Length: 349
Image (cartoon, rainbow, N blue to C red; front, top):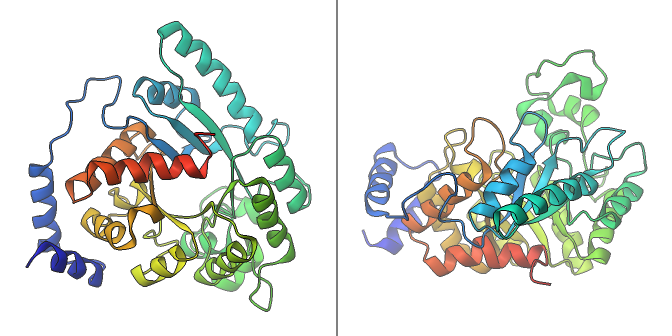
């Protein structure tokens, strides 16, 4: 079977036969040669911009990962989450990241290192008691470079993996079982109205993203929500829309669906999370999907920070290395992990 037919076969068979995956992964790991690693800096991430980095409570330390990214020659980190971002008395995610940026600047000056650029994101459930559009406008005007639709508290998340009952008013902090869909709708955030259109507040958030030309992620949306958001992207002429981890069970898009959404100018953001042992997506399948979509429609990011993952810098190195090993060229890896994410964050402006 030639390479093109093998790639098509991988895409037609989402899970793949165990032997197929074993064979392709062993060939890749034996055939791939990267630069030798010399801790504490990480090689293989130079000029990378990670648009999906976590550093909230219980995860990696924001300043520590910014120092490692700087020492390793990365270009930028977008913190989707950061310690204190949801506290009512906290200054907001952008202000928290500015504090990290100030401390990073001092450290880099002491060590003669170019500091990595840092950005903050904002998640649409972090309203701090304000109406949703007002909270979005405040976050963006304070410096947030990206808006995520509902994530942890979305109805889709609660339906698929559950959540903390304290989120919906119960006196428990033990993670629940997945909620039946009607219960998830009552307890979580859902962006569509009874007619299947985006609710007015969410439409206004998309308008704010368009007016300020910031990145907007569809987050953990259902397919119905994704397509309604895609319509809004088309209508508003948004050019910085992203679908995170399209192979994740939260999103679970087929290649045809990815192609359809990419044709609307929406970027597919593939992550280390997907190929990690926790989700186990075959990296050969991911690489084949990227090749089929075309790299201009793709970004690579870590979605790391949890203690069960490598740190963000190492996760991004692993993802880039896997994509090289399974068939992307150096130029394609650079485009998907540096050029395209830089455009989404206006990193070269």
